[in-house]
Amino acid sequence: MILASSFDTNDIKMWQNRGFMYGDGVFETMRCVNQKVPLCTWHQQRLLQSLKYLKIEPPDMEFIKHIIKEQLSEPDAVLRLTVFRRQAERGYQPLSRHCDWLLSQYPFQQKQRPLTLTIAKQRLSPQPLLKGMKHLNRLPQVLIARELNDNDADDLLVLNQQDEVIETTCQNLLIIKDNQVFTPDMQDCGVEGVALAWLKQHIIIKTQILRLNDIKNADGIITANAVHGFRQVKTIETLGSFQLNHLIYDRISKLWQQQINLI
Image (cartoon, rainbow, N blue to C red):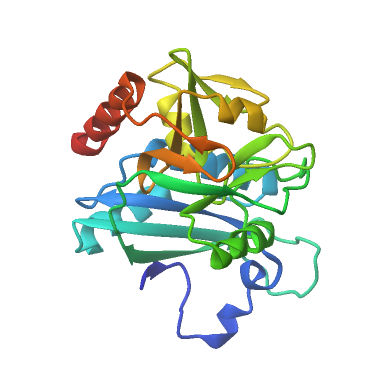
């Protein structure tokens, strides 16, 4: 459901925009509780950084927060804010810095059970110009996630061309080993999510190159996502099962629940 927009959504000409035609924009998918976004600061920071890189002026975030507070009726929902370049001229060349935006609302469905993963056959390619950005060109993720149609896994473990572990199709990874927490190095591809960025302010997380053998020998695996929070991984096909009772996971869960309850 469309909650609000900067343009008339009934005007069919407005849908011939650069977001639709060229993916010239970015988006944020946000958990909303009681008309507030628990990770709003981190979402806004990433959005502004990405728009600055694309040379697109940001929308009025205070106005968008006001819309969320005044118009969202569901106590728990998922919001997607899509921001794209406003430009009437056709062609790849960006001629404007102004933006348009669209705020959409979706139902939130709680997912708490431990996850079962399998390893994606396709690999992520290096994207030095776009790394870390939630841009609108998501075809690599779509093609990889399509593999979920052929098995019963909850998600896929995604690697790069060098067989280094990067993320899942839509979540970051945390690896517990010897009471330390690690996350994959995503220098050339992948996106550091806002849930992971938030957690880094609360616990020590070491970033390093991780391979399948590191995953196999881990004491525990956790996924991180701004919508569903932090969930444990029960099994990964070909790699085996993982411990589900861990004090570090209990601490992360408590911190996350406190963040949700703060609002």
